[in-house]
Length: 48
Image 1 (cartoon, rainbow, N blue to C red):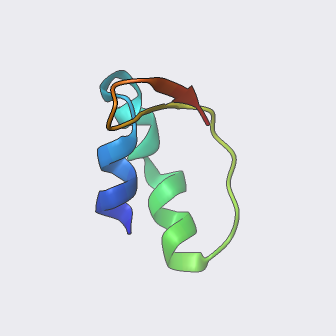
Image 2 (image 1 turned 90 degrees about the horizontal axis):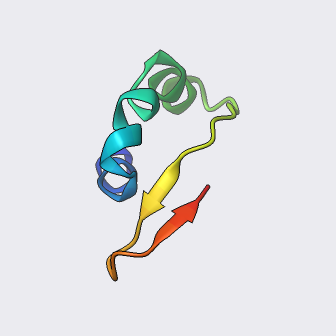
């Protein structure tokens, strides 16, 4: 799941998404909040 998610994150926002908060949330199954852009397969950008 982590790889699929990170593949969709806009390249300029990946560093923020790869930080300890994201990894920790996967391990602990606790929520976290960040805002980032998703680069979709059709090259459109969505804010998530």
